Amino acid sequence: MNAVVLIIIAVTCIISYMGFNNTSLFEKYKFNVGAITGRKEYIRLISSAFLHADFMHLFFNMLSLYFFQGVVIYFFGNIGFLIIYFGSMILGNLFSLLIYKKQPWYSAIGASGAVSGIIFASIAMAPNEISVNFLPGWIFGTLYFGYSVYMMLNPKQWDNLGHSAHLGGAFFGLVYSIVLHPQLAISNLYFLGVMSLPLIYLSYQIFIRKKIG
Image (cartoon, rainbow, N blue to C red):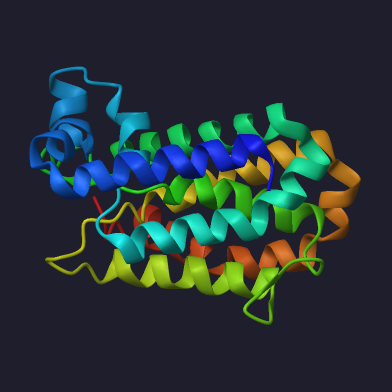
C-alpha cells in the first residue's frame, strides 16, 4: 500500500480509537454546527473526519479507502490524492454546515466525505478495474451512496454519522477528476451517472422538497 495512504489510515485508526475511550476528546473535535459557527472552531471541519462512531464505522470507511486509493494514486499521484482527500473532506463538511446551519445542535463524525471524493475520482478514471467483494467498483459505489442517502433521509436517533458530507465530497472528487482528465472522465459518464443517482435524489430532497435542514 502507498505510504501516504497508510499514514492516513493509521492516523485515522489511532485518533478514532482514542475517541472511543475519551468522551472529552470526541466532543471537542467532532463536527458540530454550533461550535463551528458560534465559536469559530473550524478545526472541526478536519478533525471530525478522524473520529468514528465505532469499529464497524471505522472499518467500513477505511476498507473503502483501501479499495479505491490505488487508482487515485496511479492517475493523480500522492499530491493529487491528498488534494482530493482533504478537499472532499472540507467541502463535504462545509456542505453539511450549509444544510444544517439552522440546527446548532447537529453533530457528525467520520471520513465519509473524504472517502466519497476518492471513490468518485477512482470511478471516473477506472470504473471496471476495481472490485470490492466481487462487485465492480461502480456498483459498490452506488450501494455505498444509496445507503448513506437512505440513512440521511430516514435518520435514526443513534446515528451520528456524517452522511450529508457524501454529497460535497463526491462533488469535489468528480470535479477534480474532470478538470485533470476530462476525456477519460467523460468516457466513463455512464458509470458516474448511475453512481450519482442516489446523490441526485438527495439533492432533490434537499433543494426542491426542502426535506432536510
